[in-house]
Image (cartoon, rainbow, N blue to C red; front, side, top):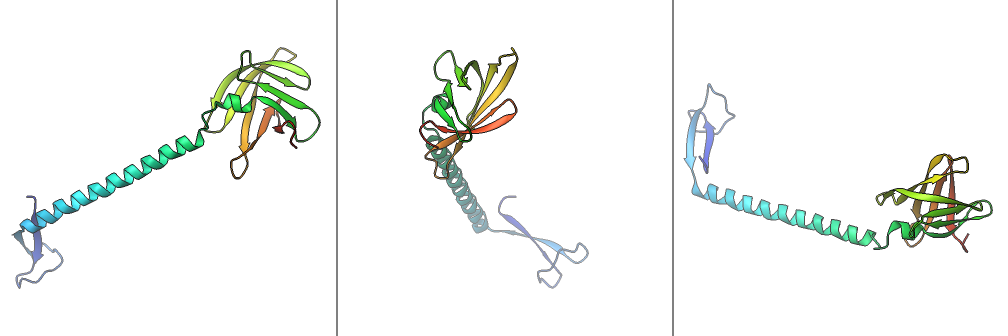
Length: 167
């Protein structure tokens, strides 16, 4: 019964721990208890709704704030300089056919996977000996999120690239 309350009492009418051998059930019907229960449930629902709304708002703000609107392939395309050693890597992932110019050689590239969660683009290239390899370009953002370097994984090695003209 909604709003009813069972209290365990001894024969002398004092509240006690429920022990079946010493207690008898007493039923108390209190409409105020029922009203308070509904009030608590409505209040609990409002709190839950508020929490869900706040989390949804934060999630939408993060999605909008983290996406610059520019495709990852476009952000990575351009001329990049090696941090160690000489030379540049020219990356073209935004126009067809995609290509990478690396160590003076042009490699036709096929975008295999774009992982926006990890800020990475996986490309398949065909090397000079005719084998297909996966090369990975990964954005590494600075602390305040204003610029990034590229971690370039290829042939089992990894290099750090910066935009050409910067070192």
